[in-house]
Length: 133
Image (cartoon, rainbow, N blue to C red; front, top):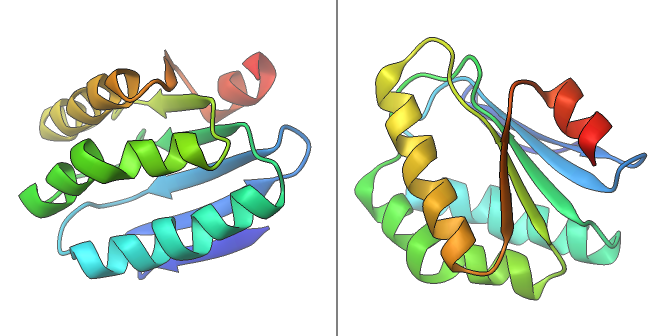
């Protein structure tokens, strides 16, 4: 079930079977901090809290680009703590198979997720994440 989106860049969907939010990214290009906060941290966090989510899965397998610096800073300083404080225990990433710069972005934010107390896993596919969870 679709919960939010950021244009053609990303769609956030709820998987009720495993109580997980799944963000599928196509591109990090031209995503603003305001768009990101409204989608993920207003709509998404409100939904996961109300539905007792345990995991947030980030699918970057076909993504291109990198997050803007202000988004990366927000995640590091506030974002991951907000996820943890709202019941998320696992931050699961599927790294980009097509873009080395996107891999760097994913590696940066997964390191910060762990620092915030989230259990971080990197898996090969969303299907693997759902099976693991």
